[in-house]
Amino acid sequence: MHKQTANLSHQLLFKALSGLVLLLSVVGCAQPGPSQNSHPGPASPPLGSPLFTYNGHSDRVTTVAWSPNGKRIASGSLDKTVQVWDAKVSKEFQVYTYHGHSGSILTVAWSPDSKRVASGSSDKTIQIWDATTGDHRTILRGHTDRVTTVAWSPDGTLLASGSADGTVRIWDVNSGQQKYVYRGHTDAVNVVAWSPDGKRIASGSSDKTVQILASATGQRLFVYRGHTNTVSSLSWSPDGKRIASGSWDKSVQVWDASSGAVAYTYRGYNVEAAKSDQTKGILPDLIFAVAWSHNGKRIAAVTQVYCGDVCDIVVLLDAHNGNYDGSYQTLPMFAIAWSPDDTRLVEGLGLSTARITQAG
Image 1 (cartoon, rainbow, N blue to C red):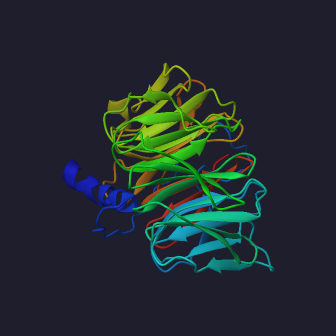
Image 2: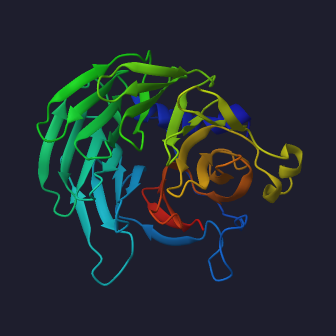
């Protein structure tokens, strides 16, 4: 398959989540043995080993989030539902399904106390609801196009949202009132994230930039212009000093959040050797998601490589220097999140499932 054709399906889905037309057909793929890294001990399952597959949705899973207390996972789907399920399967395994939206779910986020979930949808609304009962709390209206991303402030009082309408909006969770609108982007906003100290908000856009705002006022503090294509994902380091951003320019870039100085760029390692042995490196391709581990040691990145359009690769990087730290092949996926203890990853897969895998 020609490279451009192989990338088409992922691009169209990502554009659909940002507000364009969905024209996609996803198929499964065989999964070779995962590449080992140095973290799992002798008794640990291999990196990328499936630990549990959740099959509750009836359409593609577009977003996943692990609760801060580690007990539950929220997953959203094109089936217009958000489902909350136990991260550890037991006899008391329960699923809560939220039916409040009239459009596809494009983003979910847990409150810091793990009691509420915020969800954004193609219906242009953000909805906040009780994570244990599904009881509706608040509907936030203001965006004029699909809500592609939401994020809670670290103290749980505010919510940031981004949309295909090109704006970032900040909301008071208790009152439901909009505090301000940031209009600094010139294209769809694909991701927003609060700094760990709550003082800054980073937003990534199809305009190829990452912009950093003062969360209290919406004043623009810095614009990062290191990418040459759509910024699909970003993640703050736990100490708030750096940002990892992933892009359709086939790179993960880690840079200083204040100055924009680049610490390193991941574009694949030992490229020629990787063609025959993926343990020696990964060929770079479009980056769909990045996530910094809670302990600050690793960065997970989702990229499409080798297998073309029918599967993805999860690459783990050493967060300190960008060195390749392992990888595994998986089904097509569009979202990833670390467990709070950084031993597992939850994947939002394109075949109406979510899956927990071994990460360390």
